[in-house]
Length: 146
Image 1 (cartoon, rainbow, N blue to C red):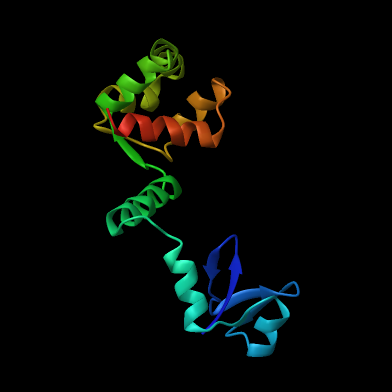
Image 2 (cartoon, rainbow, N blue to C red):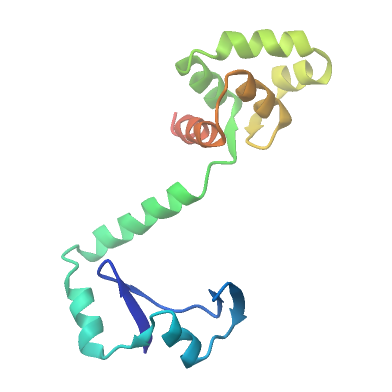
């Protein structure tokens, strides 16, 4: 099996890789060797695996946390939105901004059941508060747990 070792982790090649600034489909052995992949014996693979002292449950929990971090929350309930905005001391500012915008934005805010992360109103409100996309994602994540 061809792989490379980085920071005591086995890295396996994929079917689509960037090699010498070109994207390659199904790289050849020569191409893989040129970027540090080598043929690993089972003993070498076992040594890396044995370094993990975590139980199967801890490994599963680790990967679940990775997935949670990589996949931002896209929707929260209106109540969760109100609670997290209050926690961030933004609720009054949001209500004032929605009142100032008026029209459909006000009707949507007053009557919606959910707040979608990609809603333009979310971007407007958060830009007013000088929030980055990462901070907005974090706010949605925290809000989803309320």
